[in-house]
Length: 311
Image (cartoon, rainbow, N blue to C red; front, side, top):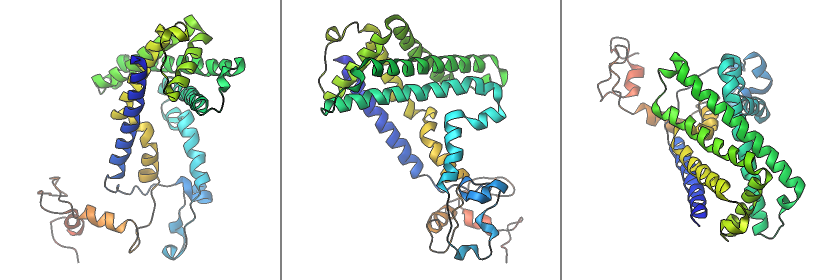
């Protein structure tokens, strides 16, 4: 029963953390415009770094946003970490297997939970077949091994490379070590129990979604998979409350910052947000700003270098 309670609590805390994180980012002030091109949703213009601003009277014409253009950039970046491969190949050799392994583990978990939900609704248990269990075992094993290899590599690289170790906090080491411990423990269970490990997980997921907890005795040898569920649950509940929640922020980082080129037109969606941001006080005391905690950003934007108002 403890394992089931931990699993329910972990899922609840994870979902709560995701919702809280999204809520925080949604309520953050409008980001300063980058004005960097190309922007992926410009479609054909993105090939040469163009934008809708090329057109005369662009503000009077409808904008055409290419979601396909964004997907062509986002999907390879998320799956294969393209930018990291281009700019830091040595780190990519550790980070890519870690992240891709996480994706496979996540897919395995979704399959398990989806199958459990289908069984709970009386739609059948497709993973009870030998082929289904073999596919699940391969996905889960490869995912655990790849992610463990990548996490261990990232930990050692942070530890050995001076330029990484200097700005790595104890939390950074703890986070990577948590993956090494959790996935390493699960992989030991897979190597010692084989397909039986995932058979236990399948039965556990069915009973979890059916709200019919069962003792481990009725599900075979359960020590390793049950302990793995506890560790996985703790890690799942922990992730959204740390900077590892960047998986949630990918949308915001790209669409709200990097690719946000929505025009600020009179009466448009951005006008109120910009007016609000300009009314905030400035405490930045740099010589070119001279904020005193009372002057607003609007005043900073309309003053000359010596504090004189621009005509």
